[in-house]
Length: 392
Image (spheres, rainbow, N blue to C red):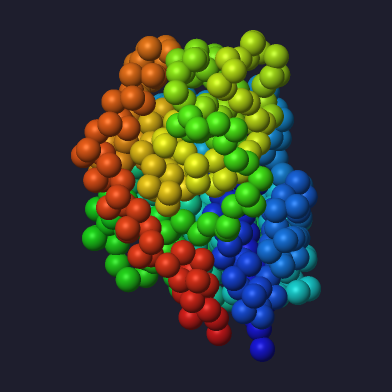
């Protein structure tokens, strides 16, 4: 007989998408899965067979045009405080729901702090999800990129608020150890070889790789041109200047350029696009990548891993500290190329970077090796196996 498995996630699509195939696999095996995120993700969650347990989020909406990339300095502390705000709101709304319908196990996203607290409060097994690079005592993003300031006053505010939150709702949790939990398992949605110092992460970490669902098959190239997917993800994507530069870079070339721009910009701000450039607010990335030659993206982990699954090089144009770490890894492992914030992101630079990247045999070898690593991870079935082993 199946068990009740509760997933807790933040609203960010880059965190929700990696879990959907795992949830579908668990429900296929007969488990009852509840999934806590915002109402706006119902159309994504319910087809997996899970029951949505929505909460009202404090995070900016997908359509908010005012959202801007946070400053590199203080990125970590401001992110922690922001997700603590979210956890306080989510916990208040969801604790009564799960008190009346307790799960047998809780699976929580790294940034979904409410799931971590509720797991401890209900004293049930837990599994932590990593849709981003994993941190431990051997490697952390802040230390590796020299971007962590222990004297940051925002970090102090976070520590004070965290202590108050845990003191009220789960005094058994030590605030000093809150970001270093010891769940029953930890799942990372990429191969171990992509992780910095991956061999220093013990058997408690399962690098299950990208957990992808079959593409719906709704997009097909209209011609024989090489396909280039351009996306800045679903959060910091209000960059019409960047999309215009990409369109101009490949205007009239052998490339069919697919721009996925999200909901934060007016499409009219892109101006008149060349005939070989098409624009979508959303498009199935897997559909496009199935026909593509390369990808230009913000270096989000999900996009990188999708590209690797299809054996495609990535031109990484990072915007946040987290993406900077991913982009550096792309470059180190020969999975593509990287442009930095100091580079001129003009049409000539973008076109040259893509053309050089797709002709580089070393990059072709690196991508092929990572594609093999992705295939070997096992994806959603392996993730579901790991979660089932943690059930009481």
